[in-house]
Image 1 (cartoon, rainbow, N blue to C red):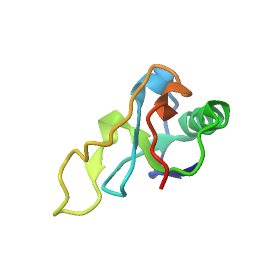
Image 2: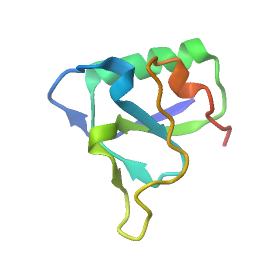
Image 3: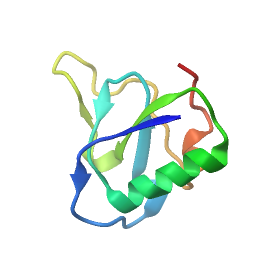
Image 4: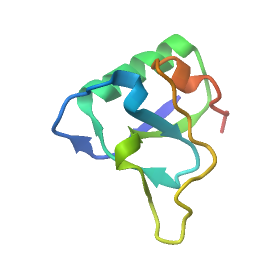
Length: 92
């Protein structure tokens, strides 16, 4: 799995995976803290998913990458666990 984080935030996680969103398609992005990114990486390894590329960010920082893109891509993935974030990730 290729994980593409948004800009790093200077504050630590408050709610762990519950604050994180994964997306596919290079349409939506946003910021994430280093400890959240570490959790996402471990979640990806434990999920054993292969062949997907995801953008990862806090749901509160969600923004479209280009002005002409929609605010939601339809590929948003959320979960209360870092492993659960990868449950429905599609291969590229």
